[in-house]
Image (cartoon, rainbow, N blue to C red; front, side, top):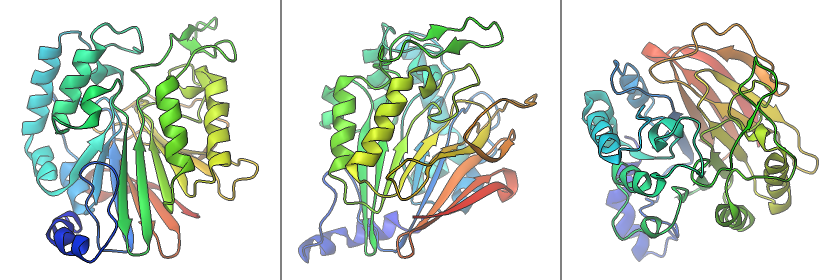
Amino acid sequence: MKSLKIALFLLPFMLLIGCKTSQVQDQPVTSQDSFTIAFGSCNKHTVKNELWDDVLATEPDVWIWGGDIIYADTDDTTEIARMFSIQNEIPGYKALRDRVQVIGTWDDHDYGLNDGGVEFTSKAASQKVFLDFMDVAADSPRRSREGVYASYMYDLPAGSVKILVLDTRYFRSALTPASDKKKRYQPGTYGEGTVLGETQWAWLEEELRNSKAEFNILVSSIQFLSNEHGFETWGNFPHEVDKLNSIVKESGATGVIILSGDRHISEFSQIILPGVSYPLIDFTSSGLTHVYSSYSGEPNPYRKGEVIAEKSFGLLHLNLTNREVQMQMIGDQGKVLNALTQQY
């Protein structure tokens, strides 16, 4: 991988000459003016993982799991750990782990409860198993707090990239069943319930308010903008959507981009926030091993471009010199299925 090995070699020398490193755990200082993120979600360890060679071919600086790394759906955390172990031994993924930093979050199926949230009784034990899978150090502060959210900072000569991995499971309130039989859920009463919980909200607000990064990447396992399909979405808690929009605006954070998964389709959504100089984009990439192959359309008032219902992963090339981001959905054999370029 084009940056991490070089960075790890140069890190002691850069520290000696006073280069400022990240304040969060295990972040290498990279040595380039561009940064490449690959991410994806909805992965079954029981079927062929076809895309890891394609991911490696893009030479990403980091791989981000967007959730549903495995499909466990059990409160037996020993079984969840066993499935994670199998995933770790899949040759293509193992090759990726050997060369690329892996970070990320969980979603319901690797959390352990389908569409689950705060009510999941095994969530604390499941968190330990997840952090083990993510190779989080035993003495990391993440081991002693609730939720799997985390902050990563990457410093480059032309600027920096901050990645904020959110946990939309551990604290999330109960969903409201839909009165429309064609949908599963509907928005609850405005002001009631939460997606992130009080502690994580305070953490996120501080991270964005104090961020000097040129790009601030938020990783949400569920979609943020698309809100009319009747499945899980931030839109089921409309006041939480408004809260995040407000924080993005008031924090002054630059280059905020949301990465999401869960849906077994991939799409770009965007909204223009008054007072924010760039569109807020939600890049959904799902899934890696299986997709909504019978997809025939669904409403999304924020959609930009076409929906992709093919196995794929997401790719972002961030240029910190000209502040341009090239976003792509990549399928098998490196095929570009959809793309969007945005200036920040």
